[in-house]
Image (cartoon, rainbow, N blue to C red; front, side):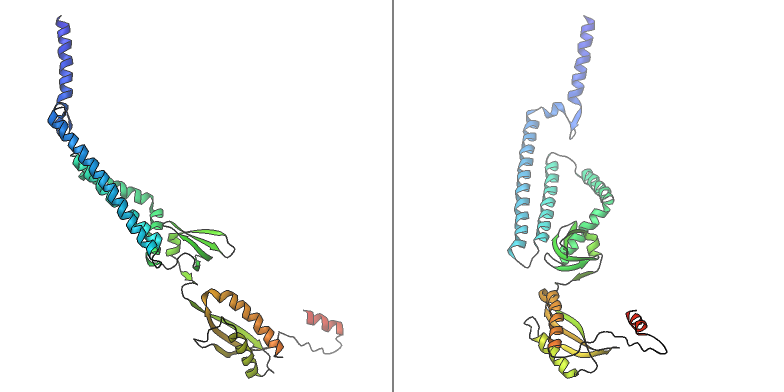
Length: 307
């Protein structure tokens, strides 16, 4: 009988220890099972639920409103405002989580310190990725290039298809998809051929020394300026630029729309050549005169000329 009583007392002591042990905010299980404590916990749960719902609603509304700003104005970049919308949403949700924890009496100071240390460790581990993200933010903010621009970036020449936070997608002149990390775009020289609405095309045409230069200049000017893609302002530049070994070279500079540049430049080379031929203007090509002395044969002369 004494043994049974001793076992019962030991069991009661263990149960009592469980009930009196502090488990939450300095309170024991016995304290938490009181009606007052249960009502307080229920109130905290309802408050936390209300804060969570309010946080999700506010973050969603603000994120959508900020994102919509980019789509409402054609001059604004959609990617930039989507990024800002996501940043605002996550900041609000982060503060919402802290408020919920405070509602239950959880000390958030230590949690913030742990999150800060974890963020530092993650930042060091993802240094390369974060540098791409930082470069992506700079590209979106300052917009040295945008979708549809014809650019040369990091030895890649092509059309920009997409700019994300991590990489820039370019379709090169062979329509091959090229993905360039943003750190390589922002950290390199960018040639944006679509940056301005006009460009200056440049050619060099050679004519023979016996040609009437005024006539040759007139043919070149009339041929190029008769094309509707040629701009009269700024005024075209057509002048003798070089006295070559076998030709007199005209340097020609004419402005055109940036979108017409490549085809325009190619077309004018052919049109000027055909116009000079039609006007009888000699277009020289390198020649070699072979003077034979002594007993050289015709075959020797032909062989030397071929060499």
